[in-house]
Image (tube, rainbow, N blue to C red; front, side, top):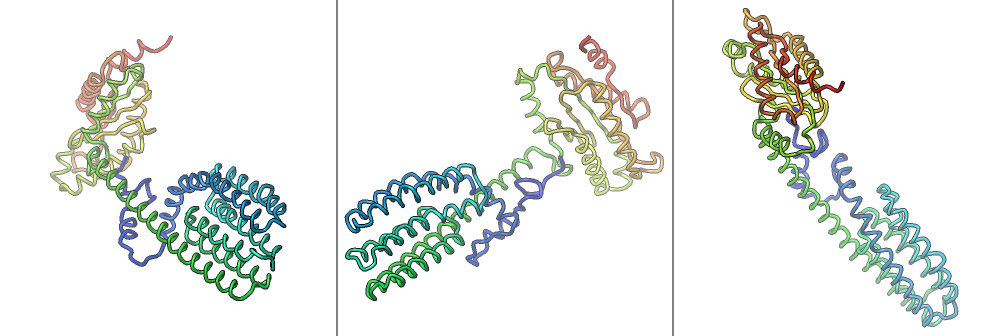
Length: 407
């Protein structure tokens, strides 16, 4: 429970890295590796939804183009029908099934690129079969719509859009040359494809740039919220929960009837003779001592349900869920021993820094949390009166725990 850095997960993304990328005016689309991985995770679900949602409408529009095949090139309509329904359509449906499994970046984007490339290959194949036929030169212009679909409707990352555009334009020009297309048609076709390619790539670049900026803003805002939330609920020195967070958790415990049969272990911890330590070594050394003890306390927490609180100046409170008094005392003794082994020097009369710990445990159905804390606090003073540097389980709580134990 030490204070985390400004990250979405410990060590994941530093807030300063986000701010540096937000202020970057180079125009590039790349992020540092750790941020790039987070961006891909952030976009994966969205990209899969975009691809899945566009496949059926795309198939419908694509297969409606059979009307153009029938009207312009009736001689190869049967071949076009076969390519549409038995080659390209199954390919797109298989791609849809794979995309729904949320594959990785390269598999997903290669599938995304393969769909318009398959449509373009079918169109160019039919065009090549009809080279020299009237109306064929009009037929091949439909490929510009496929290029627009690939770069704008599918919204692939820019690098994938660039590569697939180059492949599509190169294949288009190659087929026109191989088909001995007359020069005016060749010139118009190449000019059209170059223009459409450039415009759609610019649009694709801007869409990705905006998507990346939106990701940075959202991540930065989330980090700011997490930092402010952490500051409101945690002690700034030790990083442990503060009294406000403890009160919130306590109220939730008392309100949730499902937890009434939960056994709660409570530890009250106090640094022995801490005032003398502070007076002798100074407040900076005292702060360092408390931070080290807080880290040791955090290390004893078993899961996210357990809670460690800085209860006062040098006093700490620990809540342990689903724990008997015996287990609570074991954890307390382990913690006391850990601090003792640190051998942090104290003033001469006290040798080294130690802890006194009071322990109590019981079911919330039998006594409220406030009563358990009172018992642990009483046990803490018993430990101090007995000479400090020891654990004192609450005798009354121990008796209650025995009485409630299953026989």
